[in-house]
Length: 208
View (cartoon, rainbow, N blue to C red):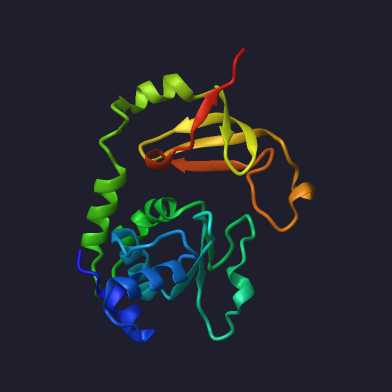
């Protein structure tokens, strides 16, 4: 994939085209979530450029995409815990790419996202398999069972569904409440979360 957007970012920020400048640029625009330009960053910057969005990464990998207009302010890129008109939130860049796949397929503009579509489909759609298990086997192993995830907070989730791209879980227990973590985002009780199958958290089945 030709990194034409990387070249634009380097040029617009008056950086030289070398490894040191690339590292500084990438860490700056992704809040340290990435250290080197890659295909995923190339695609998100192409999408934002074409559709009139800008993005903000958080250091834990979360991502906000905000549609730009004449009055767009910095606080519109704040994490709200939900999508809104022109405001999209993702747990990570993988989730964003999967979410945009259908839109890119339907795009009727002069630019065709064939290269981006092919990358997303090849990267995330493993012909219904992950870790050498097909979707049927994954469902038998996970769906309607409780698992503990050790991450930002220890939480227990119930797996509710698995498809070719995502595992959907509902948080049923959490060590903390929203009131305990003002200003921070964690999945809380009753939150529904989708994890890309290619980026599942470490899960331990709850012992009966």
